[in-house]
Image (cartoon, rainbow, N blue to C red; front, side, top):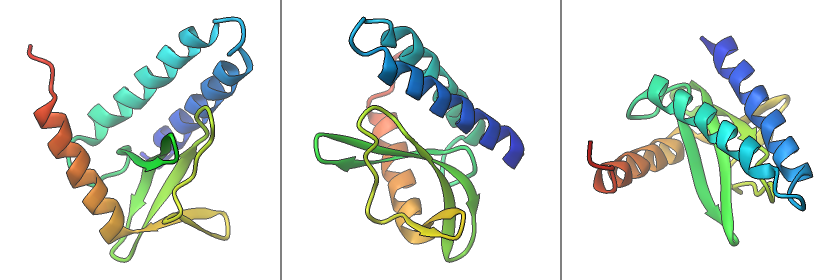
Length: 125
């Protein structure tokens, strides 16, 4: 399961890089749409709550820091960074060797908040 998620994160970051490179000529929208379709696929896979595949985003400056949950442990949650547009990073995420970690309590609160927002603004069927 982790390999599917990490492979998808690599594809998302590849599309984000192409989108950034094409900002001036307007071609970025095509790659941007593909990128968010991949994120949405992971979201559907993860469902609600803090689970692998969950997209977490924190407000930073005039944008967001984007991460995908890879593994949830009792104390820390391993995440993958999505290098989207300005590449903002959340200061609550730290690097431990090759892993990016966020305290599980922090990640769980964000996942719960995002789930509630999704319910409030869900598009009618």
